[in-house]
Image (tube, rainbow, N blue to C red):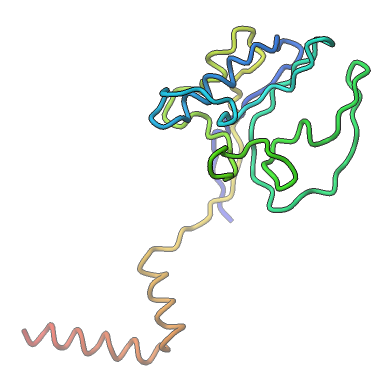
Length: 179
């Protein structure tokens, strides 16, 4: 199968640099409000900062793919003496928690890299450079997209059979020729 080079963009997180200011949450929620920048609700943000100020622990986590079901992972992590469960750092919107869900509809949220902007606004607004945009080139397989006409014809053939479709095309072309 043929491949092509594609630029993959990702937000790189350096938790050691994060000071917990939550500017990333604020700009993200403002960008995704309707109309844009009309309100500020961190529950709408596609990024959140896990905060434990007394231990000076701040870990930004941005929304990834939605999980259709609750995962089985229940591992524990200890960071600077504080215990966290696996869900704390999970990027998925899932049925077992409210993180990364639209507050009004409950629909899952996913980071869209601030579509239409030069770079994600959380990266642009991060004053400590805890968030940076990383671009890398990867080889990806080229998947041929079926044409709309092919899809429609395949559906008609499946429903009515090839002979009926050919007969109909013949009738249509002969009636067009007689006009």
